[in-house]
Image 1 (cartoon, rainbow, N blue to C red):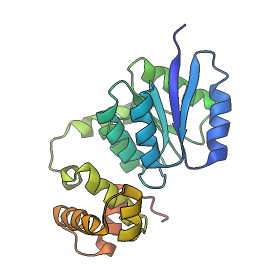
Image 2: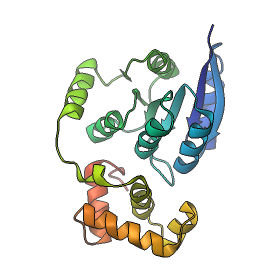
Image 3: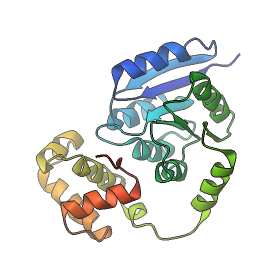
Length: 218
């Protein structure tokens, strides 16, 4: 029996511990790494190159959507599954567009996540209950549409600056997180705002909400 190597990424330690304990009951599952924020999730996944990354949607530093996008480029063998409390269409669509193989709601049974992991490991996409197969087809059809998405024009660094800025971090805090200078942050932020046709921080927040990059209640 071949082993499915898994990395867990969630900013709540108790959630990671609970999911880890339950997944390790499966004889062919092996938890090889954990991460508590988005930047660390990308780093450890690129380093370990597991078969599966189970990642929370909303995390510090980088949200799960951006983590999945970066991981798809850095570790081709890794198939990501989004674990989320949000079933809103923008989140599901964005996850699939960024390369997710599965989307499972946190309110689901653990059997749903286990099934998603096995499906993703076999190269098949999976949407957990109550997301339907019909919805999957509709989302995938939308991902095939060819349209100019301004967000897709951002570089990886600009997306990182975007996320940290939306989370309320100052230029100095962003610089410290990304190991770059505050001046470089200013340049990336200016380029990012220009590409997105935004002028103020309020515009940035509104765009992130509309794009499904942060939850509405924030």
